[in-house]
Every structure is written in C-alpha cells, then in structure tokens.
Image 1 (tube, rainbow, N blue to C red):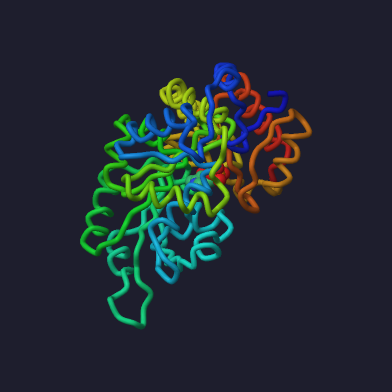
Image 2 (cartoon, rainbow, N blue to C red; image 1 turned 135 degrees about the vertical axis):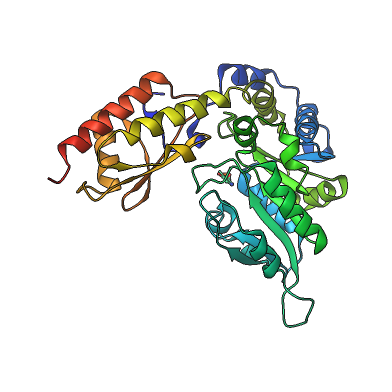
Length: 351
Ligand SMILES: *Cc1c(COP(=O)(O)O)cnc(C)c1O
C-alpha cells in the first residue's frame, strides 16, 4: 500500500493468492444454483460455523438485513445494542425495509447488553405492544475495541431467547477475530445463535462478500429475501474464489493483527497526552483519546499524520480516534505510526 492505512480492515486488498484463484475460478449461474465455486464456499462456511447452510451475500450490511427480514415480519420488534453496527451504521435498514422496530439497550464496556434488561425488554403478549421476535448480538463488538465476547455470554442470551420464543442473529462481521483471540473453535460461539453473518472482506482480505449461515429452512427464506434486495448474483464464483482463500489461508494469521494492535495500544499508552486502555485491546481495533493536556482535535491530529507521513487514521469523535490493524500493516508501519504521533503530541501539548 502506498498510503499507510489504519482507518479500517475494510481497506485491505486481496492477496496474490486470491487474485490467482479469482482468475481461474469455475463459474456458473448462481441464481440457478449452478456456480460450483459459490456452492463450495457456502458449504465450507456452513461447516466452519456448524450450521446447515450458507448464503453468499454482497456485504455485511446485506447479510444482516437479509437475516432480519428472514426472522421477522412488519411491526415486529428486535432487541439490539444501542451502539451496535446494525443499530447505528446500516442506514436504518431494519425499519426502512423490514418495518421492524429496534428496541435498543445500553451495552457495557465490552459490548454486552445485560441479561436482566434483555428479559425485561421482551414485550408481553398484549395487543398494545409490538411482538418481540429477535435479539441481535455482535461479536467482536466494534465500538468496544472489537472486544471478543465469550461463548458463555451468548449461551445465556440464547437461553433467554428460547424461554421467550425469540430468534437470535449474530452480526459476526469479525467473528473469526473473536474465535482466534479467545482460542476457541468458532462453533462454540455460533452454537448459541440461530443465524450468523461474517465478512470475508475485512481482516480476511477478500475484495467483496459476506456469508449468512443458519438452518436449511432459514436459508431457504433468506435466499428469497436476498433476491428481493437485488442481491442474487450470477457468475459470483469469481468473488467466491477469493472467499475460499480467505477461509482456507487467512484465519489463523489474524493473531498477528491482534498482536500488532496490542503493540500499538501499549505504545500509545506511553505517549504523553494519550488515554488508552491496552487491557481492552484483544483483537485488531484500538480506540484512543487525546486528554486535556493536548490542545488539538482528533481531526487536526489525523490531518497532520496524513500530511507528514501519509498515515491514515479514523476520527471517531472530537478527541477520539480509531486504529485498525490488518494484513497490509506490519512492524515498520507501526513504528512510524507511533514515532510520528509522539512527535506531533510532544510539540503540541499545553504547558
Ligand atoms: C463492517 C461491519 C458490518 C457491515 O459490513 P459491510 O460489508 O461494510 O456492509 C456489519 N457489522 C459490523 C460489526 C461491521 O464491522
């Protein structure tokens, strides 16, 4: 990469091995179910997460909205974390396209809705209330440093869902980051949800695509919803070929991204003027704040980093920034990042 891009793991380019697999992929018309590469990818994905079937979709957002449309009907209610991706960053799709009412609950420092509040949020069977149908969970939890929530939490949420006849969908955009960070088989997490979406295109480096997995009847319905959304693609095997490389070659190495993020958080903690909690950085996302000793906004710092060294960071708030590690940033880039940031902040502290 000519620019050093820490804004997100969505910026990752496909690897050489992906480009070769794409060039050589066998393809067919996937709307007829005849693309062998898509079929192979959907099968492998379903096996990995322990579900009956998988469905290749164009993006994580499409996977989540397809799942929501498949679990609900108009007027239903979904319990969801207030700062989850599906709540704040997917264009309000659940209400716009699904007529689904979100019932947002606060999340704690790790991204958990409290079990007590989930139980309370289930509406009584009374004509005054919408019908509560779905619980939406997220892992890793993006807004909380990509925290990898443990299988035990989802098992407890699933118990509640089953007691009340609700479905659970997991936005697992970075599901494999969670499994690698926790050192567990991904199935120990996904056994406690009815459906799960994960992205091939983030840390796993595929250029396009996500997979939605669930039971056979659920995926049958999801195939219909995907068609309505305009997401049934034809010779999609060209894209699925990169997805297969992502699943076969790119999962284990996520540990390197996590170690790099941890290194960055520890380095940031040593820079005067920066507030960060390295203990919360277990995957590839680092949020950090400028404290009151610094008379600069996050926007200004990000601008200076670009101008000085072509290093790109994400602005999250007035004084808050985000760094995400991935395949295309390593030791040298991390050293440059920390050195440049320290120089900028040492120059510009109030004293
Ligand atoms: C990126 C992301 C999505 C959406 O994926 P897109 O492919 O960008 O649509 C959904 N949920 C989470 C937690 C994400 O980080």
